[in-house]
Image (cartoon, rainbow, N blue to C red; front, top):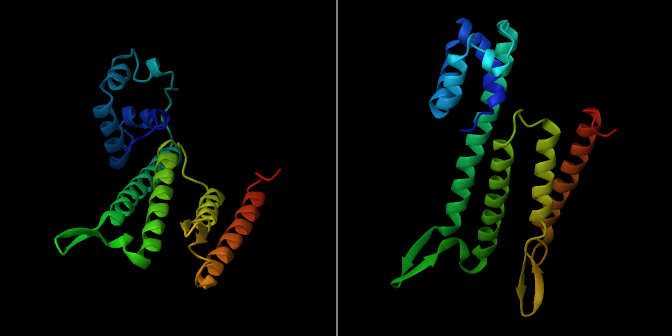
Amino acid sequence: MKIEREVIIDLLPAYFSGEASAATRTLVEEYFREHPDFEKTARSANSPLEGLKVPMSALDAAQEKLAFERARQVREATISYLWMAILFTFIPFIFRIHNHKISFIMWEGESRRGGMIFVAVAVFLWLLYFNTRSRKEPMRAHIKFLWTAIFYTLLLGLFTVKDGKIVWYFFSSDPIVGTIFLCVAVGTWITYFIMRFRAGDGK
């Protein structure tokens, strides 16, 4: 789990003053264990935070709680996306042995569509994981809708080539599923732009 150094620095005043909660102390101490040089700098300065250029006044309870809550949300989202990405990465490789041959269940006959969907979901979750891992703040609501809209839009573009022709997975044989996904994609894009405007990013 990656916690940005700036978040830990925000928590240090409360940690060194002894006013930090147990959860905050645990978070800081875990970071110290992973970054011993940083801990040495923090502890060996003339005053606890002098070497880090952090004001000596302790954070009040509200500031500490806000900093810890942001770090917790980012950590939980990162871990969730990681485990989901790993799960959906392995599902397409589930196999069985039939007639002394290895057969991948998700790529047999009509099941190939399901295999492609799982691959698409896995790629999407890995992108979400790396994006969240690099964030200092929790992902805002309209950004979540943006990612979802992109996912459904790309999902509609899944295709295969059969007899020299492009066959769209969701519009070839039975377009009902494709139509539903298309409606969801359009609705999600509309929601994204509405929330983005309300957040003041549409200016």
